[in-house]
Image (cartoon, rainbow, N blue to C red; front, side):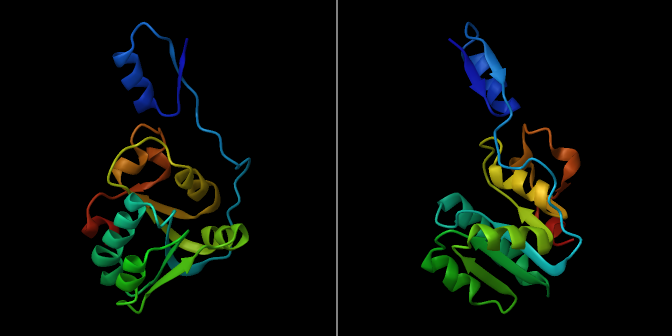
Length: 168
């Protein structure tokens, strides 16, 4: 009878595809009720996600080879089940560390202590919970256009689509 879309992009798509069905935008549900940003900071860059998912692994490898390797800062990749391929690529760089299968407490600590988080994706598949978690717990957040497309969260992020912009 109705379609409930979790992004404005999805809402537009379904309104065009099914004009006879009412489509409503309902922001996605998440566990954050208030900001949880620590004043404590460590000088590291954080990328996080389920690292066994090919899209996240692709983003992590891109960041290692195009962004993390071109700076001296500690760079942390945190997430579930990193592949052997990802571990092997990360091991080539002394400033890149993988935190495999962090507990909820460890992940919260990383989110709060990272001076900078970078979240990129190569497809605009709607809002991502990790984006909301980063905004509620982190300090500075660099994203690409695909990560925030249709979310309305553009003003809360530093947007950088190319490696040289992300390094800057």
